[in-house]
Amino acid sequence: MKVGVLALQGDFREHIAAAENCGHTAVAIRRESELAEIDCLILPGGESTTIIHLAQTFGLYEPLKKRISEGLPVYGSCAGMILLAEKVIDGTPNQKTFGGLEITVRRNAFGRQVESFESELDFLGKKINAVFIRAPWVEEHSKNVEVLATAAGHPVAVRQGKVLATSFHPELTDELSVHRYFFEEICKAR
Image (cartoon, rainbow, N blue to C red; front, side, top):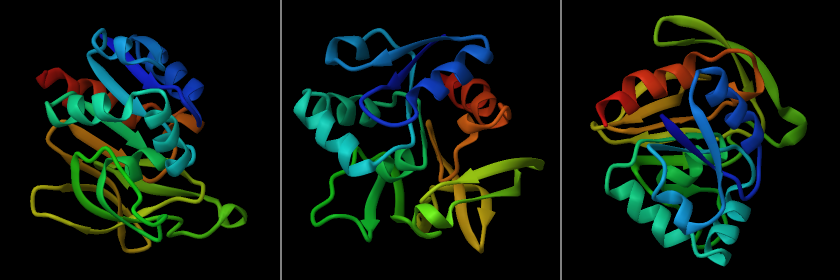
């Protein structure tokens, strides 16, 4: 499978390595023409408003939004979760997203950078180490959204159809369970 990783800002290199460690070809996506060549997409952690700004600057915003709405399998971690949400609380005025998940997220829900932490959580029945850095959480979700993991009483991993999002960063650990779930359970339906 050819995995595209949006490479405008954030920890895209770590997602590329995770995809390759799962046995897939991974490519950095920086231009619209590269979108046609991929089987799925990962939106990395980083700064959501910066990623949207750069996507607009490089002409990727509308093409990405369109591909996601057409059913391209997508996984977003941390800022990627914000980018996939329909609504954002504590974002910038009129903050844009790509959409794809019927969720409302709260930016920096667990606190600022200095309040970042690691925690063990249950992801689909498996205990994994989760890294939370200025992480969002899901404040509200529709009945179409499946909750896959929670922390502090809030959803931190969700799925809706071919879209997966986590508020934590599995790409910053050696744990490949989230990536494997994305490739084997979400992308296989493609």
